[in-house]
Image 1: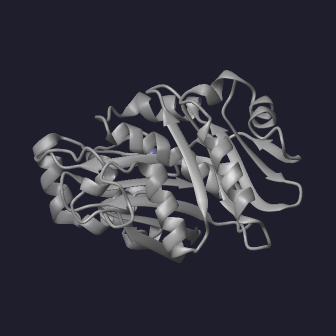
Image 2: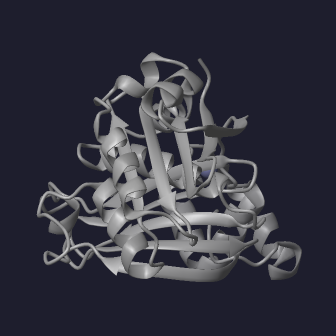
Image 3: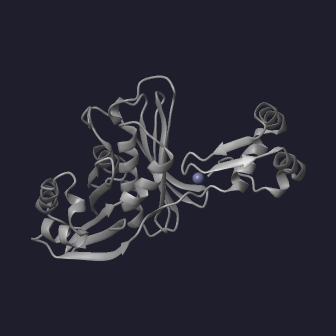
Length: 294
Ligand SMILES: [Zn+2]
C-alpha cells in the first residue's frame, strides 16, 4: 500500500483528525542517511506529524518542524509543502552522547514554522525540558501535544509509531467550538486502545470506522505524501559563491574538486576546476542569492 495522509472529522463535533502511513517516504530518507536511534525515531515521527499537520492547513506555504539543541543533537528539521512533499534531516556532533529522550536535549526547543516561499510567516516554540509539564521520557507525540496546548491553546492528541521500517500515526485536534469535555475525553480513550503497529494492518477507512464506531465520521480526500528535496545545483552554487573565492580555491587545490552533498536527499553536487572558474567569473549576479542550500 502506498503512503497516505487521510484527514477526517466527526459529524457534530469540532474535532479534526488525520491518519498517515509514510513507509515509502521513510525508505527514501533512510536510503541516503544512516541515523542512530533515537534520532531515527524522531525523524520518522517528525515526517508523520508534519505531513498530518500540513494536510490540515489551507495556506499555500510550507510547514516546518525543528528540534534545536546545544549538545550532541544540534538540529533536526522536517518540512512539508502544500503538495505534501516532505523531507527531514538531523545534524549531530561527532562528540558527545546523544540524548535518549527529547527532554534530555541540552537547551532543547521544539519549534513549528510556517513559510511562504523562503519567508517565515510565523513561528511558535516551546522548551523540551519543561519537566513541570512533560515526563522525563516524553516522546515527540507528548512534546507536540505540549506545544499545541502551550503555544496555540489547542488540545491535541498524537500517536506516532515507528517500527524502524514504517512510520504510522494518527492525530486529533480539538477546534474552537462547543463540545462537551466528555466527548473529547471519550475520543482520546478510543485512541488509547490502539496498539503500536496496528495502524498499518488495515486500510485507514476500516481502522477509523472500527476505532470510532460510536461516531459519524467525515472522511476527506486521501492524499499521497512524497519524499522530495528542493535542493538544486544553482542553490549549491550560490552557497559556494557566498563562501568566497579564497576558501573555495583552497578546497579545490586540496581535493581536486569541490563536492557538496545535500543532507536531506544525499544528492552529491560536484564542481571541478572549470565549474569553479566559471562560477566566480560569472559572479553573484547570475546566481540567485540564497544563504541556504535548500
Ligand atoms: Zn537535496
